[in-house]
Length: 636
Image (cartoon, rainbow, N blue to C red; front, side, top):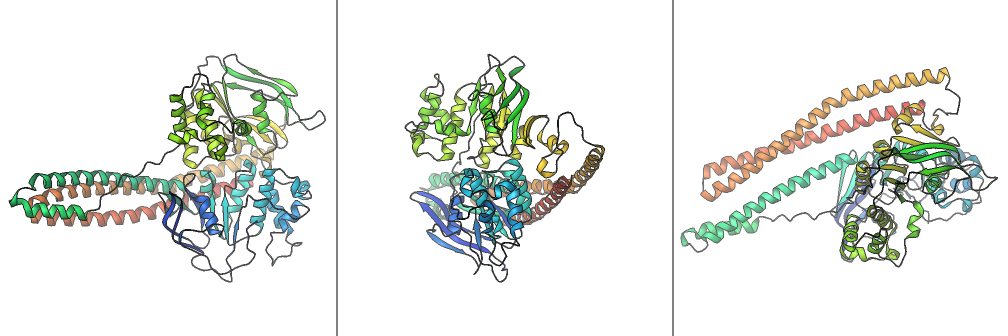
């Protein structure tokens, strides 16, 4: 059911959600081992972690839909929790009526209808859609209606699990602004790193069955964990080395009566000293696409392409022309339902145009990742068989290797498609793409089932690919990272934009956000040009101020990190010398080194505190400047 509790807390407490020492396992698979955290007033928390590590399970436990094996989850009396449900159940005759059902009970549904209308508009519904029966909506828009309902309900705690999966890029941009203004608490799961960092105040990660929460964005959290695990591994290696030295001493002098006391002392010390286990390796998607040679200039030429689903129906594509060069990175962007996937199917020659032509060079080799290609996987085949079937030259050894890259190791490669999750099927499709050499990749929303780490690997693979790429995506992270040319669906037209996504936002913009509506043969008027010049000057000034303000903090952070590294090295060296002088029984040196180690550890703690303060200050100032840039973009 649509899980929103319609009641409001009488007053705000210091802690809104408290999770204490919870444990959760499924058979031998552990998810949480003594996990605890709190969500405080007005915190907007991004929840990250690898796929399968328990993010959605945690949401279900907070909602009471699933129970933890141990521990407690506590919320204040009357505290309301709303979540985006994938369960579709509508009772009203119209979309607007259904959305108004979620208005808080103390609000008049007639007077407050504008709230529901504004949210529906932001999520891509038109005025005509308001009077449609919810059952007539597509699956994606039905999920959007559920999202509208949970936003309209204004719960105390908002839980959002992958809210952007069914949204187009314009709706995602609207949702960012809406969630930035959210005044209650929120926990959000999303694979879109930029989206998360744009709307959250804190980031929390499920990592090695534990939970870690910090103020700030994802990069800060990942950097902290990476640094801590590097220090842990160095410490473990040093401890292992010292342990072997002590064991050698014990074995060497065990039989000598004169050394019996010293040997016994080492044995006791060894027993007291906890042995650090090597951290388990956490596998990531790590792959590269195989490129086929291509020497000509153009892989593909599209000439005056038009398409409609019926002779009397509206044209999804009308007179589109462009070329695909051998190094192009072309992103197809725009609202859902406007024809982006249809365009890729036309380019892949899986559909025929109404008019116009798609010309391929004889040496063009296409690898196509399509939204509907999952349905072409055969349920009775294993992941390994599907990968091997993608190319006649693929033997079992190569197939196994590619399955390993796609995180199907060992017997997991022998799982049948019928038992795979949606994300696992997507990885099988990616594996099939890796088998055959290609010089043109066509990717339709390839990130929907990938976690953040896998998306980073995909971006690196695309950047390294020695060929052209055409990608449909709503991820601004990917657009900013790779796109050099755009095919834009906006304002009921489709057009080619020569430039990056940031160039597009600066020079054109989305029509729904007040962007310039470009029409063939018409230029922008003088007022528009003047406004854009003023906005550009203001943007330049904000960027300059941002650089000056953050530069000193970056230098301070770098200096603190360097000092911490040096102090840690000193501690390691002194610890090693302490072991040596302890073996020799040099009391004075033992005292001096012990004191130096204590003092340096105290300094390290102090520098870490300074680093935390400086990093928080940097992140807050960066967020303030980014907010100014976003507000400027809204007004221009």
